[in-house]
Length: 301
Image (cartoon, rainbow, N blue to C red; front, side, top):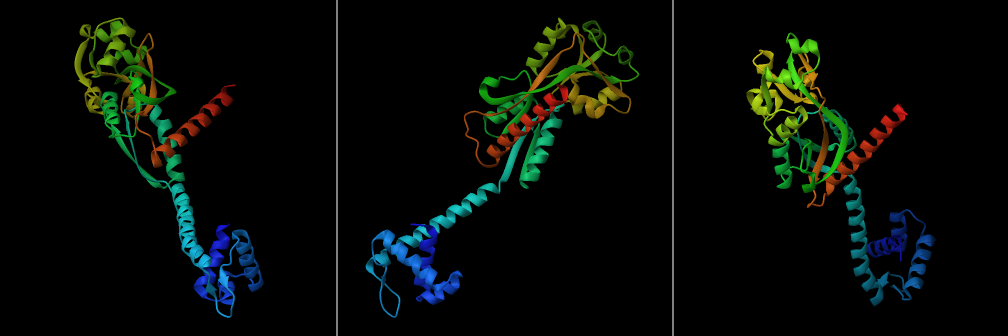
């Protein structure tokens, strides 16, 4: 029993006449008559009482009631399926300021072009704060710099890494040297990351205690410290990607030696099933990331 047959049957009932129903359905009268004969044969009942005027049999009346429900459900299902492709809503993403933001922004731009009814809500803060907000379902995704306790999340580790180093004035003696060693850090005022986990890793990488350094200040995000770097008050110890936008007006970045780099991850709450725009974005992100990595492999092979 096809939906088309039920639609034709209901139109005959509405019009009360096969000729008018055929005209409304844009089919010929003989074709419509044959369609109803096949429906009766399929169901094994007579739907219409024969006569000059269209009248329904008891079976025909029963089918009319059920057919209206079936057709209405079919139309609603088709509409829902169509609307499911028209993704809409808000996707919230927490992040720091990294080189990996470039990749994320390119993927977000492509997703927005494909789904123009989706908008993003961006939140910039430390990984600890972003992590807490994801756990409390206040953010959908987070782009964070390791170290992060990824066991609490579902996550994708990106290949993009961040070198740690110093943002300083180009006139500073270390700028000409081109890198900074542990001994160099002991002799200059520093602004260092406030995250304890990052401090611990830096101490391990450099083989020194932060207590040996001249700490001018700690900060959670780099923009708050740029003023002090420009004025020569202190040097900023940070990830390279966080410094990129400030490499002008007499500022430069030099890496640590031995070099220390950290990877980035995008995470989401593993206890919540992603649906709607969030699910679409994650699938889109993974697909674009695979294409991006494939492109890199092709260019380097």
